[in-house]
Length: 137
Ligand code: 5GP
Image (cartoon, rainbow, N blue to C red):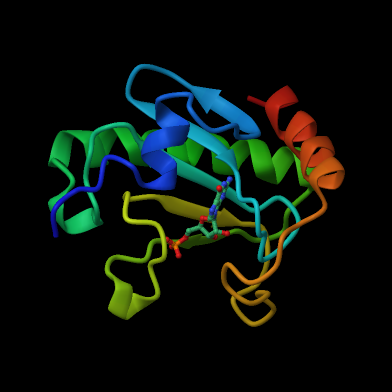
């Protein structure tokens, strides 16, 4: 699939849209999901333009997963998470709604996940959770 430079995450990477950020470097950005499936739902995205995991350059995938691990460790500590679901949807057929590759970190059980991208979360609550997670990064 051709990469859409105007997708929401491309615009967040360029700083054109706001996000509640957790972490950023020259290759990766991590921020809170706006429609969380559980408290503490975060997203980690490589900055390289790729739609799915399948077209992400392996070096970018390798680096991104290191940041996924770092953010997961921070979520575990900050929220005393007993388990974290790592989710990656590649392709609309899998349920992907934003066409820029991203990794979901959801402190929850697979059996208790809320509906996907269904309901806006409380922004103040999300900000408070983000501060706790950032303090552990
Ligand atoms: P996907 O369906 O592509 O795997 O996941 C996209 C995720 O991005 C969903 O969990 C959805 O809640 C989240 N999302 C959609 N739009 C925005 C936005 O503008 N900002 C943030 N932070 N998250 C978004």
